[in-house]
Length: 209
Image 1: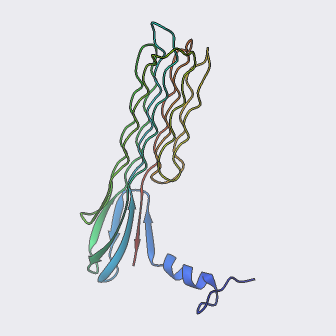
Image 2: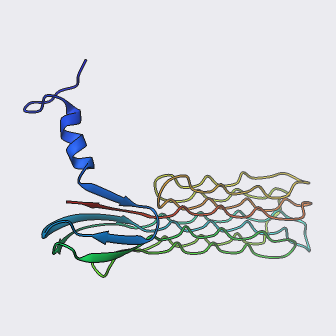
């Protein structure tokens, strides 16, 4: 049975014409205006990478803390006036790289900030900040802590906490455009390495006319 709404015979009759008037970018490129008029631009910056977990405290063998998840890229929407034939360069923000793992007595490494997504000089969506690395634990426990989840839709899941004698668990990479990576779990009391942070996901840009 067809799904219908008042004034439209089939819902596809409303959606298909819109898809024919939209161009989506997930890599760098150029947009060429087909007509003179207004264009609706939606841009999402690249997601930040998650921080790695902290190493165990060398002096006490306590487990390290988990890293923070990266933030999702910002969302920007704007109406831009272009003339027919005008070429606008497109930059798609890369996902931030997750923080690399560490060993005894070290704080976790931060994740990198995601790249900015740009529609020429008209629209500018910032990449998400990378997550902070976890600290080298000072509390009386033998268990490394979980990292925090990444921000934004499709953010990476944090590494789980670990018990001795295991290394810290890996933060997952983000799974959707602009999502931040999860933070890595901290090193346990007798493990060797903390978990690295997950990588953020790239941005996306769509132009509708």
